[in-house]
Image (cartoon, rainbow, N blue to C red; front, side):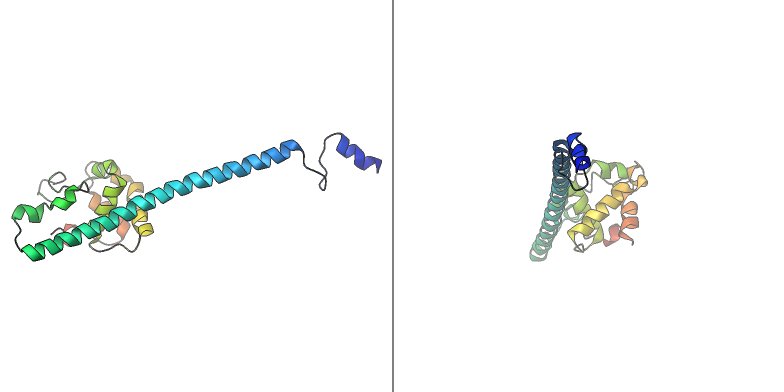
Length: 177
């Protein structure tokens, strides 16, 4: 019995004995730090989901409204056909990103300057139809972000996106009206 008491007197913790204040403080601090980290990462991911979701749905809606307007009016000037006004709202102005053949061809350097909203709209435009989901779209954006060639000034970002998408989605398949 005396041996057991001595263990408690010198501050050592027995396996079944009470915790010291420093042990309790360390556990509470570690849990608080873990919870705070979880909240920060979760909030950042939730923000990205929100931006991508809103960009995809807005882009698809605006594109459909433009198609209805064209079907109703029936008249399109060559400039409206090659340079739709709604693309400018997403930072995808075809005249700004034209290559020497006057085709819409942004580079990796352009991609790096674009916002998450513009990247999401570009993925939807290159895909040519509604994406399978927000997580998928965000994954494609992150895939293009990770490819080293996507940072090159001369590399066409459509080629990098094709590699991530797994099939060619060149300009011929885009829904530019």
